[in-house]
Length: 140
Image (cartoon, rainbow, N blue to C red; front, side):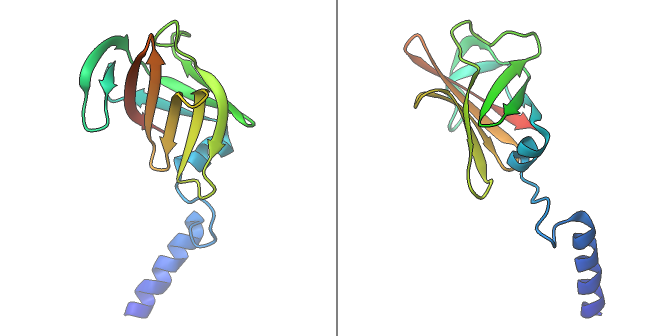
């Protein structure tokens, strides 16, 4: 019976591409393959710190956006066409980890970034007018 169940599981995995190594399920891989993913924030605003929870709600609104990849660069494109703040950068160099566990879009060298995890979670950190602002959510 175990042999039959194992064979059935392997057959299903092969059909979905997992047994051959295709389709790891990483959203980073999806972004690279499709060139775009859609993202939505967990909260409608940026926080001063969001590592453990929203600390210091800001007046900066968070809005749905897409990530558009073009070679080694990417851009956050907001539905209304405007970034959440006029001073917020929205494009820069893109680098995926070798194992596709995460990718980073550097919006401003060593300061502002968008980080996409393999499971679709994202974080954005922006330094605006001397203060850090963060947002998180999910991409698909």
